[in-house]
Length: 116
Length: 109
Image (cartoon, rainbow over all chains, first blue to last red; front, top):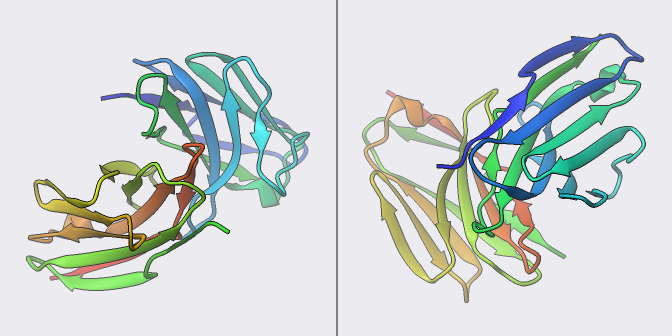
């Protein structure tokens, strides 16, 4: 099956610093990648959709200058949380959708971000 | 608007059967997904239905009625490890997933 990796799995950073999270599709080309965040005991909240080589489409209420998304290749997308604050602490999950599999999203294992 | 409804929480007994329902309203429809998510982990794919009817996969089955905007996930021979949240998601005309809030399933011995 399709595998998506995410790095790091856990990160603790100080308030005001930036954190980069990588999402990689290991055995398929991901034309579209999705970034979600999830608060405890809540469902997934889509933050943005990124297509390879183009700008990400952000959901309403998500600050594009704070959550920088880059989808530079068909196997890599990055999410950078800039000037992180404690309220940015959350579980961030990426998913990828391939060219051939135009319906299923494969999820990465998630990144637990804690901002102190 | 687009909307997915599923129960917040359900409780069942080990060895029994449980059915988790989901109703959806989307702009266009390209299929209905069920995902399982254990606490602190990412969702894992369980099933996909795009045509009416029942899809069986081991202990898990998923049903879809497009005319009713309705799906259910059926779990048989429940095991303690099935305790998790079950997320229903409908794919809209742009193949975007519209997510339900998830159903927390509690399995009791």
